[in-house]
Image 1 (tube, helix red, strand yellow):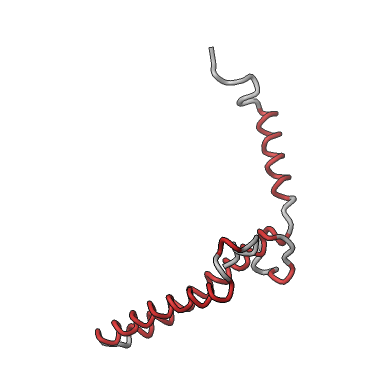
Image 2: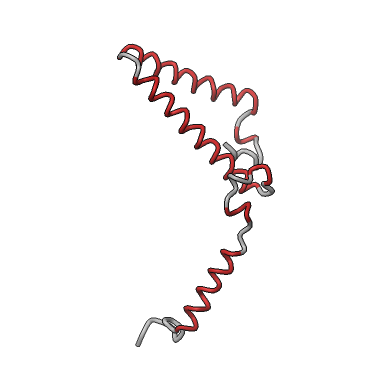
Length: 114
């Protein structure tokens, strides 16, 4: 006795499954498909979150590129001072955000946005 149903492997079942997947994917709006290029047109929290995350990622990559370029031009002492300054800046950034926005637990749906 087989553990599969009669429809498993049937061409009609496979076709129907493929059509459901295809048409559900075709129903995705432009905003959902590429929220980054339509950031000004976002209407859902999910799209705003995706847009903010993409922008944060791009800014992080640019910052890392500049950091590596600067670090490459420094001697060992300069690199250590740069690392120390970066750590101090991160601490400042986090405390500044906390002072302006309050703890994350006090926020609403906007908090997922980076």
